[in-house]
Length: 110
Image 1 (cartoon, helix red, strand yellow):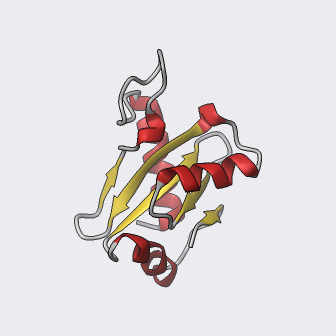
Image 2 (cartoon, one colour):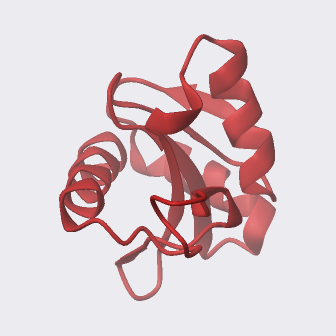
């Protein structure tokens, strides 16, 4: 179940979002300009497409996730590969990483 999240969710919603990845991990794509997140899919590309369909710009979208067991934010997604600006699946820019983490933690309340 892929959803768009624009306000903080509760623990029950977090558990539901994690169901797609074995109950311990939530994949997310965040629009760092609009500060909105899509989550709950098995693949980042599905979350990315949902945000694009709702008017987000490709350059504002970054993928990663949250591990419920380790409480760690991850910054790795194939959608992060950008010719000339981010030549990795990891988010390399420290400012983008920070904004991504702040938005994720605010919306998931973690």
